[in-house]
Length: 140
Image (cartoon, rainbow, N blue to C red; front, side):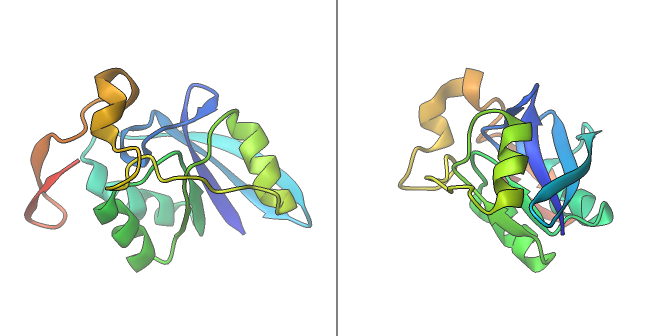
């Protein structure tokens, strides 16, 4: 299975759509195979599921995923694991071993909302834009 971890630096990113990039790897027989980093293009966040799917990703790990992004991932056949933090390589290893523990979705309403994290931890959240892919106004 091909998986991705949203990353900022070497850590799991707090927000899927605002991360620096993705650490993508295949996991097989409890092992991580050939991890590689793919930078997130400087585009609207609603294209994230399409980017991941283009790389064959079937599951993505992040600290948090907004409602619309989670829905678009589901529509693209991509599973989502949220509430993960720490080193991205270690998160991949835990996912491969089947020992990863999801936590609270840091972007979920009713949980630790991105607005509570502040601009430093979740930059650009709640900015409105019109999604060129979906033709709708949305908040990121």
